[in-house]
Amino acid sequence: MLDSMKPGQTIRCTITKEIRVEDDVQTVLRLMRLDPRTKASLKGAQEHRVRTLLIRSRGKRPWEVRERSSKIVRTEKGSSWTMRWFPHVLGDFKAVEKYLKVEAA
Image (cartoon, rainbow, N blue to C red):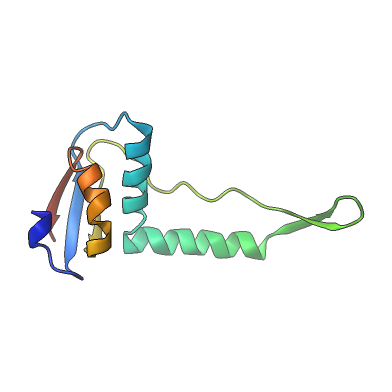
């Protein structure tokens, strides 16, 4: 199925079974962050963190107290997302294809 996809085509991905291997979880999370809505949410949160950055004094020098980034997506069975297909993510999809169902949107 992945070989028939064209670059720029919109696809819909769904997690079909629970992911137990941490490396595969990280790969799926990276793919889920390619969803345009998720990207926008993460970008908004990043801009908010920059605007509200707290600067303290540490050793009489300015020290930036940075907040951790948001965890917006979760790898749960049944979770789905849409994204545009690009050939450079083929390796990631091949690594976790046993957990995903991919179809044209």
